[in-house]
Amino acid sequence: MHHSQRKQDHLDITLQQDVASALPTGLDSIRLRHCALPDIALGDVDPVIDFLGHRLATPLLISSMTGGSPAGGRINHNLAMAAQTRGVALGLGSGRVALAEPDTLKTFDVRAIAPDIALYVNIGAVQLNYGLTQDDCRRLVDVLQADGLILHLNPLQEALQADGNTNFAGLLPKIAALCATLPVPVMVKEVGWGLSGATAAALATAGVAALDVAGAGGTSWSEVERHRADSAAAHDIALPFRDWGLTTVESLIEAVAICPQLPIIASGGIRTGVDALKCLALGARLVGMAGALLPAANQSAAAVEAAIDSFTAQLRVAMFATGVANLTSVDASILQRASHD
Image 1: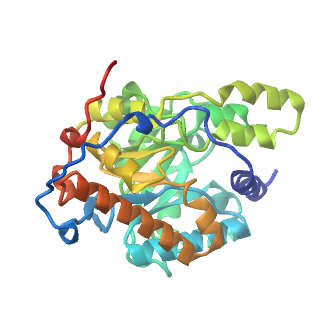
Image 2 (image 1 turned 180 degrees about the horizontal axis):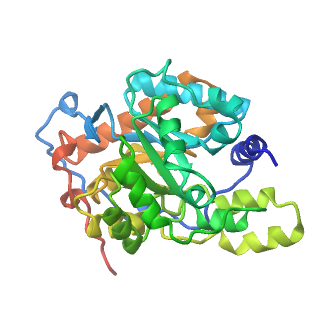
């Protein structure tokens, strides 16, 4: 199957089917501590953040979603326009298809419409075991004028995919070599099953610039692959993985504890600015959103802008009502201690 057809399948399924993880993110069981006397004006609340040398207007990375098909190109165009006007970071979908089918490159090429944003290209780390070279990675970064590379880890998805790339052996030294030689920062993310503390520690030692925990609680790619399954057998194999993974909160807490010096991105089922402030209080530098923005991105750039505006307004009100004027000092002190019966 052409990579571009697989990308179109993934898009159709994520837009039309319920592919939510059966696990909750864990954010519902965490509450922010209300402050009735915040000692700040709402107008003074500023969610600006610095991330890998870029100033973001709000701590949001539009996480890697798509590309390689005409619909994917339209979605990336809408996301990039909104990222530009709203000052947030953007991760493009997996660029493997762009290397394999060069005519799809235009579906990823958004720099002209988003000249100022923090822009990251993305490719599966496992491809380093299937012929992807450091030169390929550099070429992808150069041609798309990206500010960094995101390597995604998706062993479960590959295992459930027909003809998936399932040899994950010996990847860590290859990731380390890429971090050492690529002229831009290299980040690593999961795709929705979380990074354990041990994995986070290994990646930190390898020299990654940031980690995106991408925990369970949002889109489940085992469910996406179950919907794509072309046989009853493949469908049945994917079925029990709907509640697989470390949740977003579990993974975030582990990664922050073990890699306190590394910028950690929290993603996986983040839907609101309130969710975001909880993650920042737990130690994340920014949050990633994909599934929550996909319907808007499928519609128009204006719809994505409206979604980002809503997110930012929610975050600013949450900051105001916890007495936080800016994000430099946010920590667990604004979290409510869990009450045990």
